[in-house]
Image (cartoon, rainbow, N blue to C red; front, side, top):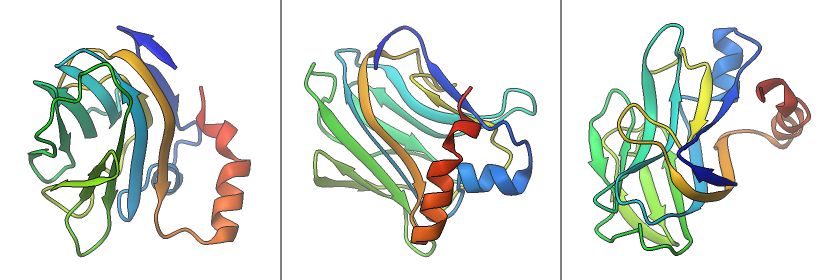
Amino acid sequence: MSFSGNSLQIKNKRNSKKENQEAMPTHNFEIQFSFKTTAKNTALFSIDNPSLGGHDRDIILKGGNIYAYVWPGRTAKLSKTNLADGQWHTFSLICEDGTKCLSTIDGKKGHDGATDHSNFDWASRIVLGSSKMSSLFTGEMKDIIYKSTKMSEADMASSVSSAADYVK
């Protein structure tokens, strides 16, 4: 997907807290995507609820370095390298109960996040290329994954078959 100052929104149409947590888990989850940009200060990923307010799981570039915010933690700098170099980079953030969120950048361990889960359980949409913490994304993204790390094979099959319910 190419972006030029725009974002893609994926909404949960089911509107119940339980189903929101299935679609956008707050515990034991992984966010992964590849991106290419030359913008040093830009949004990559976030989750929010424009009706009730709030945002979370913000992943941004600031000065070319990747930062992540998972509430109730703080914003954590996860890289020391300029990733706004026009090359493809793969980023992963895995948050599991009992360990701090772990980041991987281009297959190498990044810095740890500030917490092991999110308390933002009223999210209603995933937003690619936009965040309350940075400007709109310009560049390309691909291979976007947001999933539970504790799903069984049956849960994964059910989740995939109902994925269309979450796309606007």
